[in-house]
Length: 254
Image (tube, rainbow, N blue to C red; front, side, top):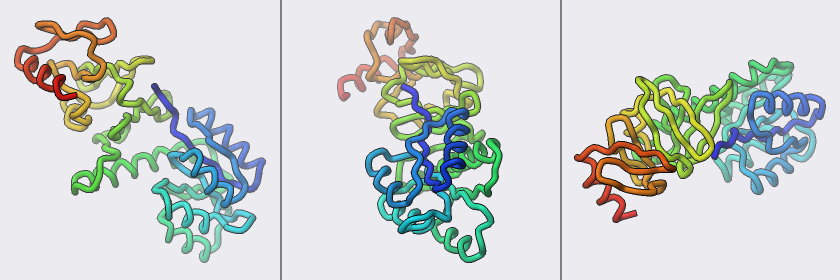
């Protein structure tokens, strides 16, 4: 099942906020809320955690955007993208202390918004790849093209100028297509800019097994195991002799 990246907008100028919401929707992202105050944003995040927060630096209310970012970061690791209109040096220096993933200067174009979000996803992937390599986590992993990403419970793929999430549990199987992979899920087929070898190394091994040079299957989706193939969603997928024993062994432990 695919899900668009979820973005919360915190902006007290409602005309600007509505315009941002419209542009994000047109780009294929899901807007989880449009809120004018920081305290409302914190309450909303507790109900529906977004993937990214677009946050105006100069908010009205009890907290400005920077104070709101500090409060969010006390509980969550959510990327912050600041919206700013001619922020002075003091505000800029305070904002830097919250380590934002991007700044967008108002007024801005849709392309500025799109690039800031994509660069944010890219930066997260790089940071968490480093954490995984150091044994500290299992989050985003990016490939050399920085266009598709794998988490421990979902895959991010680029589709029509947006990044979509596919839940790993909903993937049936993955088929090699030269230097690409085709992901077959419950809903549709996706093209992933990654070789089968690369994706095999990065997928969670407790869910997936490469049973043929051209196929990786989701173990939980198997309907039938035959002598030379398995059946998933009425599709007969070839299986090498060498992998049959490993498959049967794995099925006994899941």
